[in-house]
Length: 252
Image 1 (cartoon, rainbow, N blue to C red):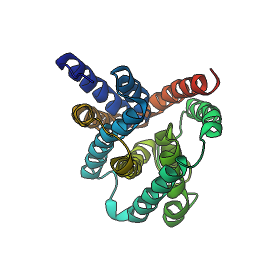
Image 2: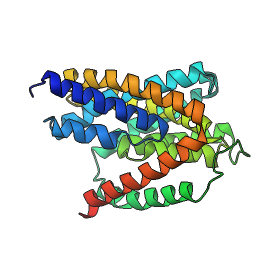
Image 3: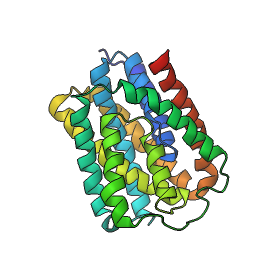
Image 4: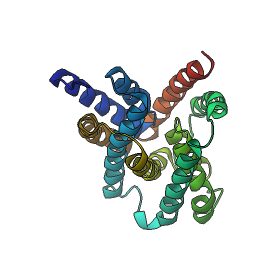
């Protein structure tokens, strides 16, 4: 593909918007992946390149949250390891199986998730009682979330955030910070897989990577300063938009 200055600037801007949205609520791929396809990147390469640029956003957000003290790596070592292994397993399995059935189910889950956030104004406003221990979450829940991201992907950020709020008892801002850590982990696992077996458009990916750095930084600052008051409505809207997109892809 021919990468003009105008196209490079457009992809940078798209990545910045996607990085900001993805940090706050997830779903940045809804913006970045179609942009790659419209720019002329072949589908398989677009998916691989999207993982490259998306990893930049989740890394930036994770680093910002760590520096702000919203989480600690030492508390999440097991979750990082199991999420990574789960994502690798999901990436391997997607090459062996057809994900069509899952694609038809996920829109309904996203609609339910969006409705739950919309109808629960106090959800994640403050920390609450943990329903499972940190060890159980890391050993059982984290690898399932990583597996889903490696196998299918759409809505991973929302599902991770809901798991941290409902099972871990975190407020939404804290849940979002931990979500970015695990999301970065699963993105890296998928990226390593694509480096071995996929084709990445490096020029495009690196330009969008820079945009993701900027957008994710802005999004992370908004999460810290605005908290649940910003996260909840954005997650709700993104859930419904993503559900509509996946519905059209699966049933259209």
